[in-house]
Image (cartoon, each protein chain N blue to C red):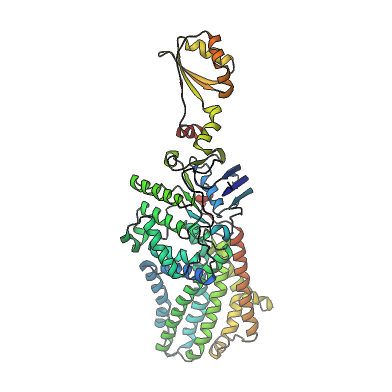
Length: 271
Length: 308
């Protein structure tokens, strides 16, 4: 092409600050963007209403000391339905949200590999979701105390551990769904019915493929849960291993997909 | 001079739609304008340059390496997209600080850099702490430019940065770009309005329908296109006779007659050979010539001709 502009000095290729983004500093940046975007007045209001809704319903529908109804709210509804659906919405949106709002280009043009960017964004979202669900769990605990539910003190540490693992594995799976399909909510709900509700009930080892089956095994380490639900705590180490392995697998697939696949808004793709 | 960007037989399809069609070019350091009408393939090309898209076939290297998923190259590129989308909930300081951290700066470095850059892009200080949802298009454009400059890139890639700017904003943007170029940054800037870039860019790449129509300096582009862009206006006593004679001689690609004024507008096929024969042809035509004017086209006129 043309000769360089005569009245301008040639570009100094060595001028740029040579940055070597480490995981921590990049995470700090993505974490700041994640929580600040989510804590706007509008989003915060929705979050608080959402967090208060279930414990409030549990409070009004549970008689004092009625552990069966309270555990139904806490485990059957909150842990096995609401928390996974929240993960599906929050993590499925991880990259899609940036694509739809045309802001992904600001991230993928940073000097960070795409797989690292995906993983850091996942962990920033993970931290936020864990905090939200931790607060929701505390609210449930508070309701349980008000309703004089026995054995809560012993359940809560186990419950917290199970919730953390649950968010990890469902978060990783949801982020993969988000990368795979624009309609990740439909994909996630179909998966939930087929695997988490269907395969989980098959009385052979194949039910280990359902994450809910492994989470139940962990919860069964609490005596009250074991008594109320007749779940077995046998194979707890295997259940933990499966949950971790599944998380790593889903995250690796997500990172691989994001490394090789382009993501553009529909309008962009027509240009 | 080693080129910054080197494209060889570059193709990019969107399904059956072709975004770039067998494009080859090099871009040297400096200020280069990427010009073409909407849908010409400018944004596609810029997205490949900035590692957001991959070519369907062919190669494109920036600083000698492919940009896709290449932090080493991306470290040296700053990109300002065309769309005015920004994280509306965030304040510019928060957003830029976060992006600086993602790019690898320490929190202290990031804070300093944010101040420097916001000053550089001339965003009014009271706006620094306001959520970007309240910003005008021009203010967002400045913040977008600021994020592209955060890590002090060697190559700044700007997709239609003048869009939405008022005349003063445009003037300030031009000044910012000139300052950056004067400090050694190379800039690739796209626009569908050539006049915006003509005063600031020395090199141009003109695209249409996914193809490179011309590339080089303004002078080089005129020379490249001379073969089909040359026009002459002739006043004579018998324009019809002259037009017919020249047309039969096979030197014209077309002509227009203005019988009332005795004018004839000639579109010349091959200017170099035409001018060799011109004097002889005029004598042989036996037409009395009163005036000959060259209709030398400006770059803008050439652009409009080739892109419409």
